[in-house]
Image 1 (spheres, rainbow, N blue to C red):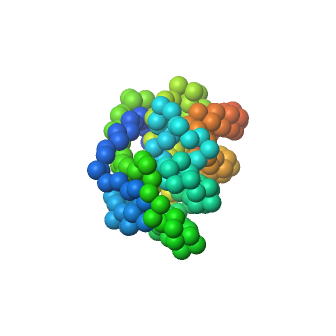
Image 2: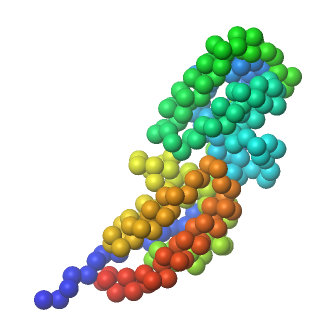
Image 3: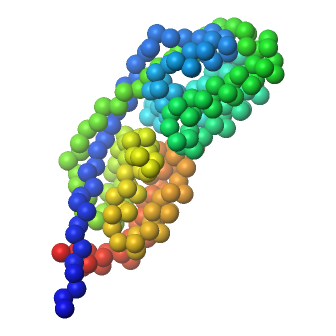
Length: 232
């Protein structure tokens, strides 16, 4: 009896993206104002102030990993709260609303500790900005997992952002697009999924993420090319 062949799950469609920042007109001069506006601001603002720095030409405050922490440190001069906000890892929250709630809670706890801090006025306000992604189809199609490693070094930062960071917001289980595609292949690729899952997207630059993926996917897939014989 002939061995049954597997059905190919379809190609990986490579896309690129550009981030457009849109001002909401909302701003806050004090921590109390920031906390109140955070309760009703568009969810894309929360997303923007945590993730958009990956696609900016430069980042003025490399010590801080999100805009809230940087503003508190630079404008309100409160190192305690800045460091607490800096520890927030957005990828650990199931959705934007959970992240928003955690952010507000940390700010309100600090105001409770120091009531004068809540009304200390900054010289430069916090401007609420929201993000809009413009997505492009690059025309590139990958048929097998090992091909990811072959072309990863040509991927733009926008491609890495779209498939590795923004994908987690779109995927119901919080997966990046690489793992979502690779898991459609036989279980032999499960260790590769686990390797990719080790990457922390928030504390690495897009170039560091790309280097990690190139190194690990190439090493793993070098011995997996024969998997193509399993498909019809």
